[in-house]
Length: 489
Image: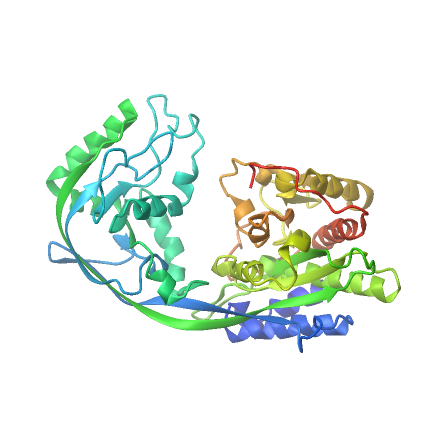
């Protein structure tokens, strides 16, 4: 594993950003290793690659003015290219509707009794609390999906026929930190420019700009927000504004590849069923002269899958191959939004109905602040669709690796939402059982300092062995594991 990590996270691979030279160089290296293990391309293919194509959107020009005064992008507002139709052009806005929190839920709806068709909406981020300081939608101190995923508010506004959505963000500065890098490199998506034209313009704004837009009605808006807290009933008002927005996209095609290593099963009755072992091999690339090496994220997981591929290939060469087929898949585009795995599930090489499970490995080489000992792994998702998968992992760990299995991030209430943040999730969305091995984040996460010398190789190898044994059991048990859990996906 160590040799793989040092190679993939070297200067030559330039951070392995999707669509860039270093990413293709990494794919070639991975394919070369599969060939060396005696794993041929999938029947009918000339290489180990599944070619994928994405679209990258950047701003050619983005300008906003309020009452004729220019507003600086990333200082008072954030507009992300993928949240705008390509044909946006100049927009003049003379009035907005303040609509509370922009929520449309059975428990509480800001849209109740309001016609917002063709209107530009101004809303607060997050969701309302009650007088006991609990969130109204959950009745507890836990937030709902309306707080952590803007998709819900965007879809609600779009469904109601709104013209645009403007969200006042209390954590605006933190949002700028995350948005800045994406705006520099562009947003790489599965969507085509034509698909973007169906999107609703979304603008995130600072509280200061929110006050500026509200003008003389700022105190009324604050009173309405307080009234929502006191009564639990939605409030709205119309605000006169003088806004000019001009957004022009820059668009280019971004090619990349997933790398596939296929070990065909030995049982004629079971070999059409496939167990996937996955890791993403892409990372963040370069920012100026800085290389984001991505040793833990995710040269560690990529190396683990390569070792697992070699072990299965050797077992087959020795006449002891798995009964079911095993697909070792190294995916691109994870850092761009789980794009490589999304492409695969939309263009599967093997039927999703015949896919038994996905064993996903992402960031297994470090120790986080929650653990003093390295002998652990977080296990995420194993019981969300199949209790049998959970039981298998527990059993093989007890027998072979004896790691401490930490389920902290498997809780439905996990504020980090790690279950939704790696490639296994695209399989889970298709009702395929998944298990995700992870060691947690650290100070070098998504920084140039994530380097090979900091990887704990013995720890990573132990987790790789656990993933191998779980995969081996999935591929060799007489009965395919069942999907027997609902409501946790």
